[in-house]
Length: 95
Image (cartoon, rainbow, N blue to C red):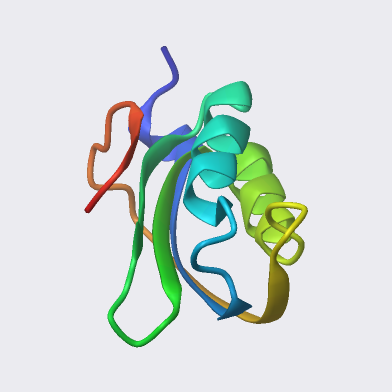
């Protein structure tokens, strides 16, 4: 297992047509394929919010992935901020 120093956290907000288009499920699957921890959920304002924790290259890959998302999504903007990891384990869809 990697040390905390090797891990980074990205807090991401995705806007556009990103709800009702399997964006959350696709995000979960993409994160699990990359061994990235965290969560994703739909916000009341129409955006999708996600947190990714893991090795920097994998987290950056997930942030880049968010610009496309699921095949039915139409992403307009991705706003990501990076911070120290908080110990997320596994990846889940939050309701």
